[in-house]
Image (cartoon, rainbow, N blue to C red; front, top):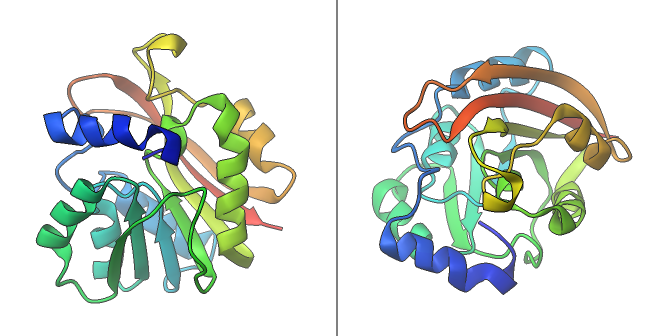
Length: 203
């Protein structure tokens, strides 16, 4: 879920079960996201990259509805468990990789981010967005479900809350905003109070 330098920290979280971001299934906003991709981005098929996929619930969801999905995580244990749960799904590929040092791959139509950007400290966010931008076809989309409001101080994260203005600063140079909607989070415990569904298109 983060840069190679913090791989041991994230691996430790997985080992002790400190994975509060894992919902045990696809995110409740996934159907809404699919509608927005279809109607506003005209993307109901294509290649999708899912960074920091964890147990790959969302990656599996996208593959089941027809996208060709490649999910990756920096933690080997996460990918091993994801393979056990979803490895037989058609159109789903899973691998262990670092978002900042990705191997050469064919470009993607969509990057889907649920909890990756929100796990990164400020000093890594620009490099992460650049890395994801490099994976996209011209006109491709960065689609995300981001944490808009969390019950933590900034020094207690991750996860980190991301405001619309802060995300806009990251994307504005290389992307145009397609949609931004904020929803209350009904999952418990309430570490995350609000989430934003966002789609940005690569210029």
